[in-house]
Length: 426
Image (cartoon, helix red, strand yellow):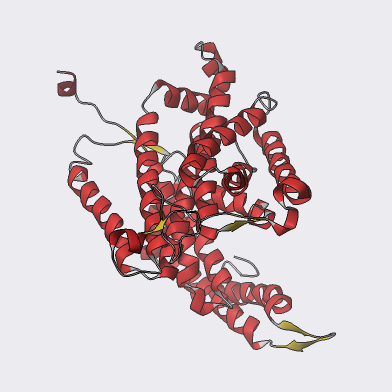
């Protein structure tokens, strides 16, 4: 403790330390929340940092006081033990025996969910699914292969602009999905080949530069991308059936085709269902991929590249496959983003998006599919639920993230290895 005497009683020592920490908190928060600009001057609202400092003081005092008790020491010991757990554990044979019953129920519940939501929450749920796709893609590169990629948003942009620009040449929604996957995978190969010998921070800087290059090209190539003005994206259709009130793409509106009443949320429901099915297929595919030779090679590369090469694995192909597979998923997510927004421009593909996707992978647990899904849902839905606290929701969001990393430094879900008993081989 700071500015305390070893001979002080526990309460007095905790009080001194908490007062010092509260003072530091006030000095930090005062210029941030205590000064509000008003034209060329500013208004003083020192009650805001005073309240925040009081909260910090109270939290610090409770922590220091409990740390001196037997209950607090046991709690801290349990907390330290949970942090020391390895990132990978072996699951027991009966650990997932109820999964075959839970998964179908969960699948059906998510499939009928959009019929009970309004347009706003449908758009939020669709955005959450898009970030699930992005998290799954970056999880291959960062979580499984151990390649730090800070420019993943570039592949996201490639997919979005593939649909937006391709629609001007007759490329529809369903054609754009595989085309965007191919083009994004090619972009991943172009990025992966020059950085084969780079690791760690150097790789992160190069991928960050790649993401900024793509954004600047989209922003400055006015003749093709539209520059800062962006490009419109058409509404998705299904076999010539449109989900708007009137036909815009030369098809037939769905309510006229089926003879039902028009529902303004029909387009959102359709897009959500298609995206949910794609996400479900990707989750199934990536879950199986980890136990396949390619997934094993990615994990071997992550643990030790020299040992990986000594085993005869072609590290060039392993790295390229990770970059291309992750980029492919990002490109597919970009198509759904363009279809949902109806418009794309470079401001949607900044470094902040790459940082958010990386946060999803880290918070969920690098290499864990379930963890990435949960983290993507939390990081996209939680800010919307805190919208009523508009002035403080970013602060609350940041505090929750800090607490999350202190409580679960290895992510929400650790990587689970399958358990095999002797009877399984019979």
